[in-house]
Amino acid sequence: MPKSLFGRALAIIIIPIAIMQIAVAYVFFQAHWQTVTSRLSDAVAADIAVTVELYKQAPSEERAQQLDTMIKEEMRLSIALAAEEPLPTADRRAFFSNLDRTLRSALEGALDDPYWFDTTRYPNHIDIRVDAEGETLRFIAPRERVFASTGFIFLFWLTAATLLLSLVSILFILNQARPIVRLAEAADAFGKGRDIGDFKPGGATEVRQASTAFLDMHDRIQRHIQQRTILLAGVSHDLRTPLTRLKLHFSMADASEENKAAAQDLSDMETMLDGYLDFARGLSGEEIVQVNIAEIVKNIIDKVRAPQPYLKINGQPMANIRAGAVKRALTNLIENAQNYADTVEVTVSDMPDIGDGKKVLIIINDDGPGIAEDERENALKPFVRLDSARNQNVKGVGLGLSVAYDTARAHGGDLTLEKSKMGGLRCEFSLPV
Image 1 (cartoon, rainbow, N blue to C red):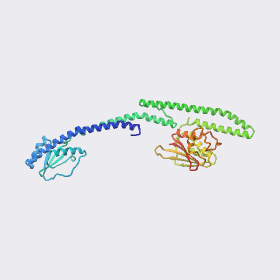
Image 2: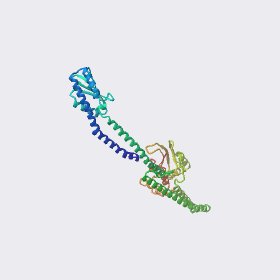
Image 3: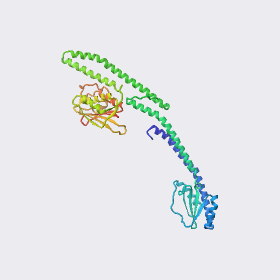
């Protein structure tokens, strides 16, 4: 079966029509056309047999001309004597071999003399030759006297009706499938964080129900995202005021070890708040623009601490993205690699289309401790710290990989974690072009 709804619906309609038409044509040819054609062929064969016997009674050129005059009007046959021509031996078969079989069967039943016929040389006539005691009699008969021509007319109208019905079916199926395609496009756009535009329910009742349910789901998810953003942003905003006062207090206090430790704790708390805000902000409020991913990665590397990662660029990696969100995600991945490794390599490549569309692939390799295979899925969850694999004294709240993963999936891409050839972690961040 075809994979598309259009293909399956078309097959459901066309296959029964085709089976019905084939069955009708088969019954028609077996029960009607074959019978009529056999009777016509038998009549022509009988007329030829009578004419041959009349010629044998007084074989001559004059006798052949007399018989031609007699049968031309009454039997619609033409006869000529070809005394010097032997009976042909080569067969010329018709495209519809059933025609030849019917005529051969009729001639075999009516004639005792050798014969030969050709149904292909002339479009409207049949050439039949009979060996009458060493002389060849050539008969020319109209095709409609030998075969029933109504069979081809019936086939023509049957085929024309089938094509017309199929065309109407295709138009109706396309009209029914179009709302489903629009629903799929809207769902795909929403899944990638894009605006669904002026999508409205349409089509059959079931499709309208699915479209309405999708719009309700879209509204609920949007409200959830807005509430999450407002909540985390509000908490972060409310905490910044007392944190600022505390920073001012410690900056004016003496430089004791206790005050330095407390100031460091305040700095870590600010870092945590920035992580919460990044997680809350997500993709909201950003427009999709076409940018060069390599330029974004270059800007990130230029601003991170030394030693800076090695950068390799392949092709022209352009993509339609929310630049701010992607920049935050890649910054998290690169800084995360720097926090746990001594050497970091970043590769940006423009990948060809291998069936799922062209993509831009950003690969980040490091020589750090890496992440165990059974922990990689958990590492992509928010607020997860893999202390057994990473140093727990490194700053962060366990949101870096989660923000990057959400950003990639929201754009229709993906983030996968694997073991690097350098011995550490390999992050593959993909974005559709």
